[in-house]
Amino acid sequence: VKRGDIGSTARAYAAAFLEPRDGSAPLADAMTASPYLGQDSVEPFLAACRRDGAGMFLLVRTSNAGAADIQDAALSDGRPVWQHVADLVREWGEPLVGEQGMSSVGAVVGATHPRAVSEARKLLPRSPLLLPGVGAQGATPADVARAFTAGAASALVTASRSVIYAYRESELDWREAAAQEAQ
Image (cartoon, rainbow, N blue to C red; front, side, top):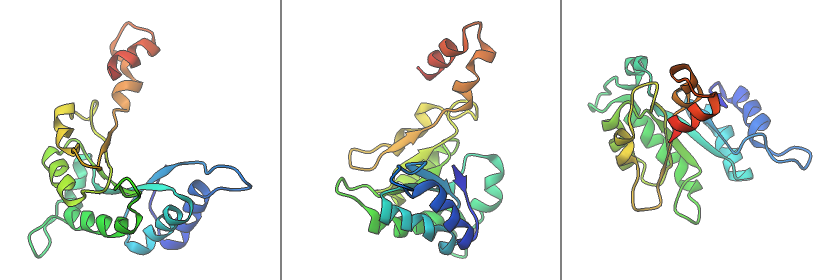
């Protein structure tokens, strides 16, 4: 699930997806949200992380080309906006670092920007990184190598369209084509 809205609406999204109901497990273990509306829009998700053990990934430096319009804009100190957002993600996630040294609050960093992946890992040493953009958007496994460290922090690499639609470029059955592309 991807969500991002003002606090009251964010509260409803957090309740719908991350909170257990009637003794049942939540609909999702984690979700993606946009922090670009500020802390009040993120707080309901952080509360679900604290209360129910949920996880979340906050958009920091996304993989789409148009992200540069906002996320790469320079602040008065010369840093790009996305690095300021990474600092906020680290700050919000510090109270949610678990026994294994990782936070329940991770960051979405586009694999299509290898330098940003490397910088984000330095800025977010205890946050898992969700790395979209491998495959259809052109990023490669080599582009995400710096996201992985010997310490507790780790990363999840997503390759969605290139796997889901692999059959379009192949004579194979869709299952075989997807498996081959994933491999």
